[in-house]
Amino acid sequence: MIVAHEHSGGVFVSRGMDAPIRTDGLRKVYGSASRRITALDGVSLRVEAGEVFGLLGPNGAGKTTLVKVLLGLAHPTSGSASLRGLPVSDPECRRRVGYLPEGHRFPGYLTARQTLSVFGQMSGVDGATLRKRTPELLARVRLSDWADVRVKKFSKGMTQRLGLAAALVHEPEVLLLDEPTDGVDPVGRREIRDLLQEEAARGRSILLNSHLLSEIERTCGRVAVLRKGKIVAEGRIDELTSAGSRYRLVADGVDERVLAAMRETGASVARVNGHFDLTTRDLEQVNAVIDRLRAAGARLQELSPVRSSLEDVFVDLVKAGGETDPKEGVS
Amino acid sequence: MRAFSASVQEVFREAAARWVLIAYFALSSLFIVIFALGVNLDVVNGALAGARLFGQSVDVGGRSIEIDKLVLGFESGFSAFLYLVGTFLALFATAHLVPRLQEKGTIDLYLSRPVGRVPLLLSRYAGGLLLAAANLLYLIGSMWLIVVWKTRVFHPRFLLSGLVILFAVATLLAFAFLIGVITSSTGVSLMATYAVFFLSAILVARERIAAAVSTETAASIVKGLYWILPKTAEIGQATVALVAGKEAPARLADVHYLAVYGSTAAFGVAALALSAWLFSRKDF
Image 1 (cartoon, rainbow over the protein chains, first blue to last red):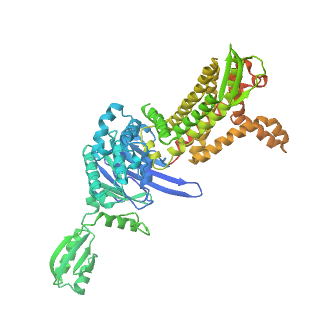
Image 2 (image 1 turned 120 degrees about the horizontal axis):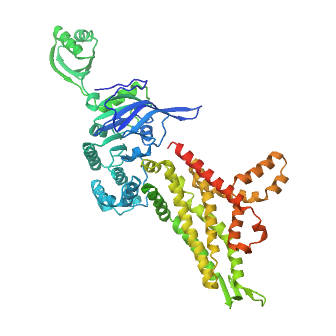
Image 3 (image 1 turned 180 degrees about the vertical axis):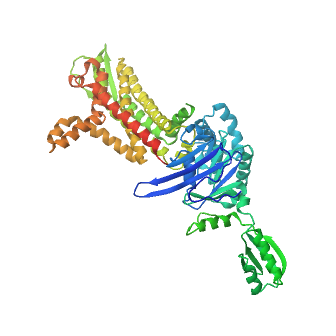
């Protein structure tokens, strides 16, 4: 089900009351009385257990603010947010939450092993468990050979993989990841994608914030698009990018008279490199176009649905909001 | 508790890794070595027969000086020096604790853990104080052992001076934390805290300053500031008085120490509470 959110920010999704990640009418306003910036404007979403959920939006859309509010790094102006059923104001809600911030800076003087130890202890994991879990995790992120090397000697990709291990060290139920594949080579990206899928299969709820639409498309089941602090679209990727409105049509004997007849149905028909791009409202309109085409004496050769890429959907949504550069930050 | 203790350990690990701890103890060791090499006393039958201080012969004028009193006088005087050195070194070694914590990319990693903001700040404060206490114990304990070694005179009160110095450090560190939370700058925290240290020392002469200013309001501000700020000069005197005990000069014995300690502690508690409140409300 595709859910288009209205600007009022009302709740359109109701998939269960105990979603591990949940926000209701979340609003965050920064600044003083004279200069207010609304970073989040009535954001409501749910991320269920075992789900990888992607958060999309141009720069300044409010993605990072949303994650910060969920983690208690920023305080909401109004509305509510909860993790694992606990309000985000309660530090206990983060007991089983793993977070990988964008541009994180682990202390350079710590080794990979010490990093997992420090942040594991801060999440309440005891020493014996940490000693057992650390080598397993380092192996999972291919850092076993670097376990006792100081973090300051790590490359960007290695630091990112260590960050992922630190986010997983306390076996979280919820994972909030901000650009997890940033700086990681293609092989490493695939490994991170696989790792996230494994974690989701184990019932983890994952909120993924990334500019890399291709990564989101491959990793996430559902996405939400944020624009100017509001969710403008939300749904499964296959639904968002599904065919149903655009078709590729190939036919013989189509002249201006036939085109005019087809357009009388209200559909948009454009000639493109030997075929026609047909955009319709619904299936009825498709049939009406074909009927007119045949009645005018033309011969249908091919009619195939055109699936949009996530990037197309994203750009269309952002353009609709009047962004000057909808591709800003998209790669 | 595990998170609190991990955060305290982290303060020490960070201090060691960033050479702060090493520089802190190295400077202290330098004072100790200079003291150990510079002070040579010739004690005969419990009395000072001769002395060489930092290479200079001290003329005892043929008199027999009771070594016990001499050591007491020396230790009480030296405690004032240690108060200044100990406080400044401690602040220098710990003022970065909040600004570093608040750096972008670092604060996210800590606050995303199941630890409240106030306990996180307090764990850094506790770590800083423990670091200062360890150094004071090393500095004062070593000095005391050297005095015992050279004179065979035991004055445990000298060790107590460390507690008073730690009290001053605790108060001033709370203020450094407050400035750190507000500005996220180590340099500004240090400058502001040293400014408070010296300003409050100047305000000992508040009556004379108040008499010299042109308006009644300014005079009231000067007197008010004296009671608001920590009593750094009087705490120094308290250190000397504590070590000297009954031998303390009358001018030191006359100070109203309850008011000094009370108002200084109130300043420290207020600064720490305010920094915790601001830290808990801050957006990162």
